[in-house]
Image (cartoon, rainbow, N blue to C red; front, side):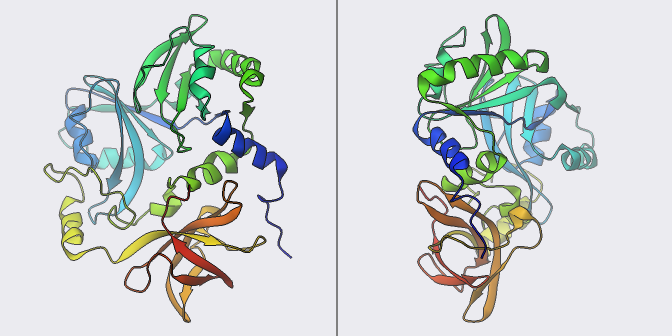
Length: 338
């Protein structure tokens, strides 16, 4: 019988619950594209669905990049570092740069991958602010959500962003040059016992279990869907021009045909292949008919239950309905579990 690799792993559970109850920290460096030039703002406003031009310096915004059909090519966080300088935080510079090249046109803009210049440590959880205040030279008590500010640790420059991929109300990202990364590690390890914090070492906890409980997406969930299907239409700049706008407006008028739902499975030991481990994902079956695909399956340590997402024909089902996933009964839910 298949054994649930999450449920019975005490190390994974302890790392996950540290983030929820005290604090957890880990190296989780995203790729960073630095975009500069007098047309940097206009260029990013054209490439991304949500407005970029109204961002204040030091603030950030989550947004999607669409193709001409309104389908999601990437989801990113864009930081306004200066008047004409931005950081685009992504996991897919290899596909974003060719897209930038294809649409640069006459925009006076430059962009480059600066990922090698930075390591990023996520420090997440209820005690993360106090933990960082113990090692930073400048307190972060007044720092706002999605704000990135210069700071330092023992005089070594760092950048602190309030945000993260865990859904925690208090969570931060520490950006540091690689030559100083050991300082951050040493400081976090030294202070961890004081706050009952743990170093998170399991990539599945960093990427799957924590984020899914709070309704955060991966590209396996939203790639090549449109923002209206997956609930990412909030804040779209309908009054500006952006790639995919015309197609998206038509979808908005007609209504999306699919919806991304959450689901739970009560059985402990399941095997439901999903897009997060590769492939097309298990078929979602209703009365013998395929109505969609499973995008992600993981385990919720807070619910002690298997959870995940499905992208399905929304004319067939609604929240509360039961479907079959690879022979296991699942109940459709909201995408935010806790």
